Length: 258
Image (cartoon, rainbow, N blue to C red; front, top):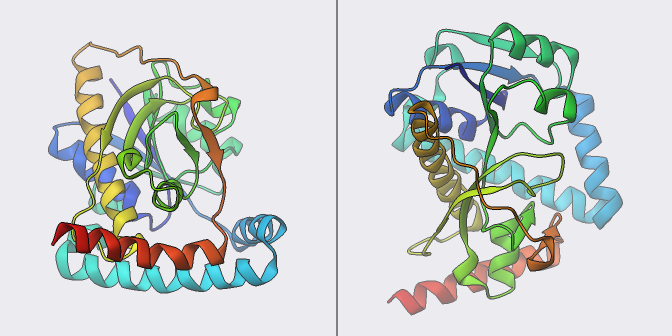
């Protein structure tokens, strides 16, 4: 069975998935999307339209600082993730866009049976229909309750500490609406920042994905449980004002642990 990981350039999460699969004895091919400046600008404009230009700038600055800190942590704790994708697997194909014809051709060239997403963005029908078995995604939130983005942020803000965790699900045409294969709750313990919490959840996602893929390669393809949209909602980018509240919320968890 041919397993392909679809990720973006320099994604630590994509690399974590590849490493977890490799440790589980799964050989993968990788399609890497090279994000262009125009694609990043499009994403920034989308956030600015929803939250306003000031919030978009502030959140971009926070994300940049968090990225530097994450790179430092990984350089100190897990240097393997600093390698190029060619250091993880034999076949690496580059594409300019997630849903571009280049990606279609790459997946067909890899003869993809099972596609695993790693920070690839929203995948359209032209990509979803290629893998023979299906498309898997690891989501840093408990579905169906928290769909979309910034899910651990919103769960913390809402006081839903029992809905912080990860989900592996089949991907359909909706956003995090596919059939749920497995969920796992995450207990906050000595997490000082939201970015560290995100990193921990993506690590959990990669481990859960590897376990599911091992199950699939053994011939046991999980059907998954259908979601009921009314049980949860889709979340979007969290405003800067709310992001500032998360630090004190996380600190309160630390006090409870003590």
